[in-house]
Image (tube, rainbow, N blue to C red; front, top):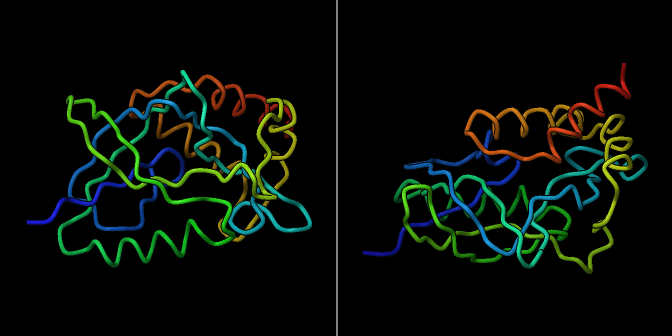
Length: 178
């Protein structure tokens, strides 16, 4: 029997995986953080008015809580094709296999999409104020940047996952837009 395919969701995959899920577990990834460190020119922005999307940015000592999805057996090839078409659209993400610990204390290795810090879309180090200014006004092929932020923050809260930066961004973007 082959190993199950696990996928780690830390942003929109949490609320819109787009593939057949057999199991979903809250999980923790050590050494990485969820960050609005990738300029979006497709899904949440355009080349003329770039938005921001979340990525996993390597950060020693940090962690990222998200969701480990076990793909429905038999749907692995279709899932990989779907994810690659969605996540690798501009080559700013890299595919990586990372060790997670699920909330029920299982160790799994999951496919995750991490930022390429050498890619032109990488923008780590933006202040929360800079992020809010971009997110408040960007729109791309999958909708507003604000909707992406709000949906991610709401779904994290529903799962009991705290993310103070996302919560602060939701408040600041709302203030900027009145």
